[in-house]
Length: 367
Image (cartoon, rainbow, N blue to C red; front, side, top):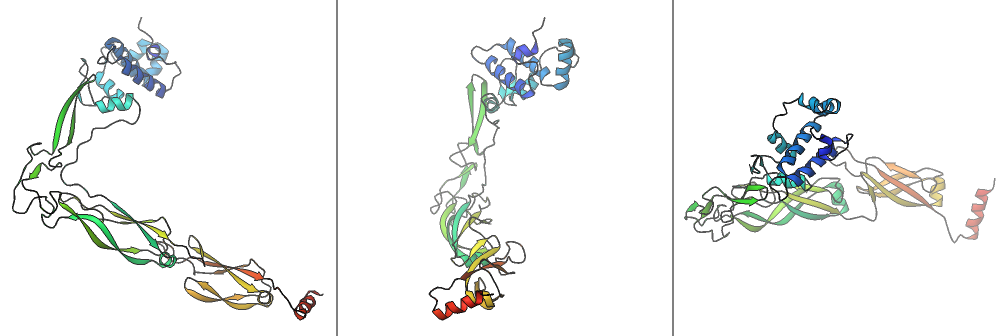
């Protein structure tokens, strides 16, 4: 009588799909025929069990009718090694054990030993994008509020003007790389207990170009780029805050062999201003008024980012009263309009009063 599929994988009949998958991978790793101590017969049994239990319909039929139910979905003759390879992570690659399954050694390690699945990668060749640059720029409070244009000195790699970026001394030949024979990559074959697999890497002598200068450029020494300090003009928009980054496309390091340049990222750091507190687009200030101004009302001058403006203080104003100066705050970044300026007044209590002043205050408090 055929062994129970759940027993083969070592899971309970109520096991979840994830538990079945994990159990299969563990068993497959332990029993793989190319490993020392592996068992091809049991390995095939594990795969057969998994092919049924991973499929909801096949599993339901097996639970109800046993092996006869599972065979209703397939002839049961033989094992689908190709499907096994896909499920186990053994994608297309080089030949493995005697069953003829091809697999990618990176996928095998990725799935059986934890972590994300490894993928084949094609070595980069030819032109390559230049690297990005990062700078930090300090701004005054006012520059951040209203925006400013800054001229920066940036040290970055640029295309060599002497060889125009091809790395060869002008007038000399550029030949096919003798190492990679013009392919730009070098290939090596390795044999492991899981089988043979092939790796490719960028050819070091030609840097993946497939061609090599017979005589290197005397200015850039064959790199095609030179380090230069250039002036870059950046426009800081109104309303920026500390930590915001401005991207300048194509202003980073030059690429190789005609590849596009990287980007320049400028992160701003805004200095504080003791006169203002900023919260988004809103500005806050505090101003002192006298007892008489609070009681009788007055017109006072308050400082804003636009300069001094008049503010009317009504009669009977209490300390802590807030007044709004609409549209006197920070310009809204990438939007129209401006925030508000909130002025909080603090009533100063008079001290060192004369007798006459005390008498007048007492008269004010009498009913």
